[in-house]
Image (cartoon, rainbow, N blue to C red; front, side, top):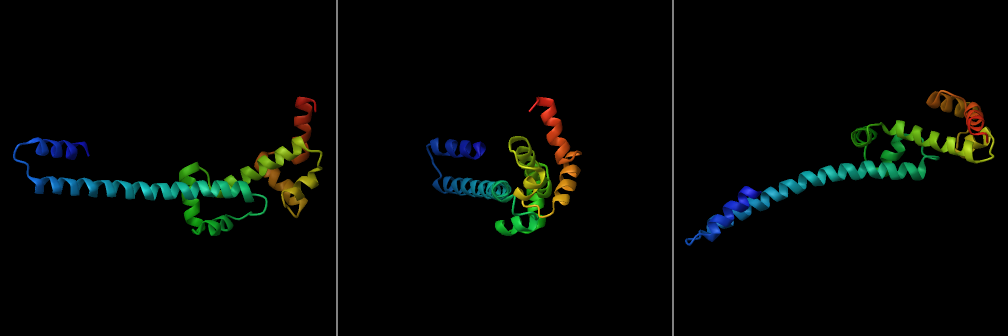
Length: 156
């Protein structure tokens, strides 16, 4: 861009200005700018979809448990959503969904008087045993042991 602008300036400051040449320089500069902005627009659209997924996840993580549900809300395919999210956050949508659910489960286990069953139902797990398996798979410890270990560690 600077090369084009310098050439335009040099031709403009000469006594014998070639207005047609300046006109063509201007066209080239505009075309280069259009190409640059189109490339950035595509990148921004991808980033916007990835960020939109993050916001949707925060809002719906309790009720939407499948990647295709988020993809439908964003009007894209699940595969494309997977690609975008992995590019942007370094994790798959499923990993992010699991992490958000576990974060909320830990928060409820630590900061509420709800039983583990009530925490499971608050997170819309219809099957308590599935919640326990899910929690243990993601954290390596059962919800009850997690609550007890934190209580013991910090003397709750």
